[in-house]
Length: 197
Image 1 (tube, one colour):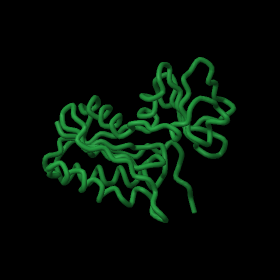
Image 2 (spheres, rainbow, N blue to C red):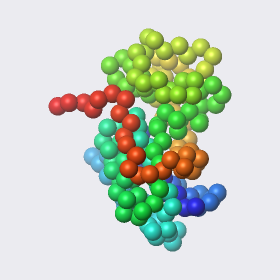
Image 3 (cartoon, rainbow, N blue to C red):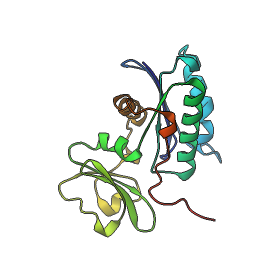
């Protein structure tokens, strides 16, 4: 099985090409000058396929992060995944940022990402809890993984200070969930409504 996995929802872009159990390519792209990292998504995907002799029609499964995260990043991921899967007539799976990060947190993970307005997108006890007020989050007994903004408040570790293989984890989780892989079901995970104005 050949999997093309990508994520533009978090602070960096992750792109992975996996064939069976082998990672053929793994790229991490940061923002450059005034360009947001998602601007490099299509060219990066083309590069990693070309460098590995993989044609788009060889792809069996497309995996993408569906959020929460950057509103623009979520839209870019989901749109590209849906269009590619439809055009290539292949499977597509969406995995949330919270589930991807939970795989990195260790035992009894609690993942909290800044949701602004004094709240966090929360993953706890094996499920997404939604956008929860910071003063309602109890971290006792959990392995906390969060972002730079919430780490001083909630403790634990910021994923942004670690070199985590998030693209590879996305590909692995998508492969495990490929049974539910109709591209028509692939939708952004908007826990809060998008900002207006």
